[in-house]
Length: 434
Image (tube, rainbow, N blue to C red; front, side, top):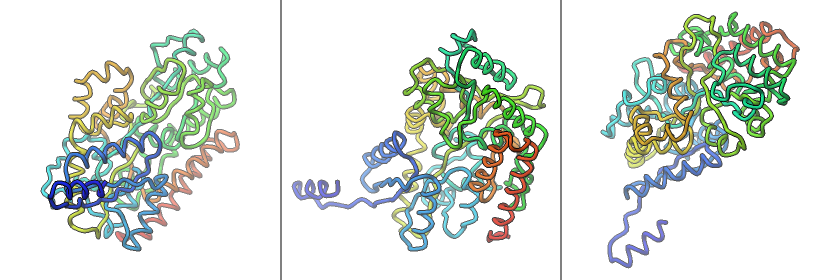
């Protein structure tokens, strides 16, 4: 691309001015990776001073690990994509990060956190409301269901189950009809502990889920979560609920028609629609109707873009302009519509609605409606807990014990809390803020 620019300049007799390259390490593969490449290409085409160079580095964990090692050898990128549960870890690396609010202020680029959805900015802001990283891809769990199977089983295809008791009834009807499983779910901890707690306005941990201090203590082993996990384990015995593994391993079971109901990320909506050979219905996360305050609002998953220190000043000017570009309503709306991630600004949501996207794509607005159902509370704002990648693994371990009937729900959650608190204390001792 630069060679062509040089040749063009030679042919025209004008001097060639090389654009400043800005490395962006990310964790988006497949279709999402193509969308990232498109974003970079569109920004690069919009001006001539800077060139965003995206580079796929593997999973979120692999991407962050690569950035850490690169920082030690002074070869770090200017921008790195980090998933939401890595926020506390990134905040602890104060000398390595350039907070986004400081960057935009220093480079005099317009940047208003109030333009973003509160449930998004709240997750990534400090105690004074300053955004530390740039919100990029945000998702939340929603319910998907197979309308064809619903019709065949005598269920109303236009009525998704709204509560957990309704999920149980509908899933049993699907099993009685002959479905391999009534319902399944991806991301067990994210959905059935983290978002379940937020939607029922229950804490994950003390200290406002970690936002108010590193000395937070996990406390999600309460009677409501215990009852929920116990119910899932009971349903597992007859495959009304059928556990399908961690991460996104459950999604293909819904796409191939095995399970009539699926709870997964809103960001997989386009993928599910493209690969399912049946009519897909959509609904909000279920809730237990006897829990006061439910439903509240769900929290987000996904990632933000963190800026790393010790890059040339020219690169930071380009990063600020790139973030300003990403904030444009038309850019945000296109990202939302093409990927299934949330439109993280109010203007992008309104533009998408005005363009008729939600009318043409029923169910696409459910994720927005769900995270904005009520103003976030301390319990539903999100979480900021160190080493949460490891804590989530511990939770998944214990949930699997409960679903397999090897532990009671109470014993499994007690163990998850105990293991998680050990990890929190290790993180606290290692933190420079201690």
